[in-house]
Length: 304
Image 1 (tube, rainbow, N blue to C red):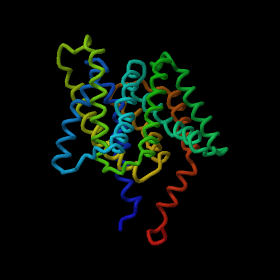
Image 2 (tube, rainbow, N blue to C red; image 1 turned 180 degrees about the horizontal axis):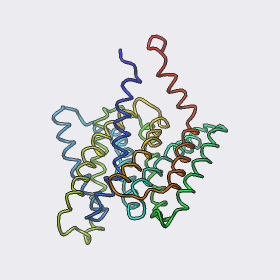
Image 3 (cartoon, one colour; image 1 turned 180 degrees about the vertical axis):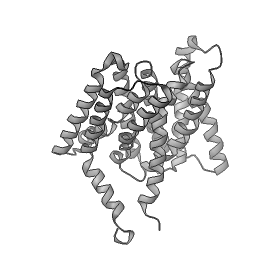
């Protein structure tokens, strides 16, 4: 029987790589069309595609009350969180968006403390302070780095709704197949996205977006909305919410590198130091979780 860690690692690695490219894809997708239209198109295209996948694989979509509740909870990770993220693209670089999402584990820890009274250790408090210090250093480069307070506010709500979704889906515990959970959440997201149209109708694009925007939207539909959500909901059934949110600790370095290499985003030593402090603080915050994961990976199957 395969070790659970061996089934988790490929899913985890795929999710990290897809998420690392997602902020850049979002920024590119809104280059030629308004942000909210790019978001609506993303989910309206993803829905029929994932429906076809479900039909080909003959996977049933449960429609009982518990399953529907779980789909609504999952949609908060999709349409709700992404709405705030798309709004933030006017104020933040793709690298900064990914870096801010690295604070999701701290948000998860705070929510766990509020809901389950999980106490924070001294090293976790230290990690939080170091990470916040790194964020402050990055923000101090403010105007030059294209950072505005409203962008930070949008990202706060994006991270909050993303983290709440993890705990909400876990709490509902609908026990539906990962692809069914992803599909149901996307379908609910489409319904919510359609309610945006009356408010953005005046911004309806007059022409098709350019090749780069179309490529980015295609990536967001196939990779970020379908493949990533399959990995995400599959992992949600296998690991804890805090362990799952650790993926956002790994993605910023990759995302910032992609932004610099592919989007000519500015390279500044203060951002490098600040990013290092943020990631270092987050690693301190989850030192015990990482140590536990590594010890489990090193333990032979026969001893588990």
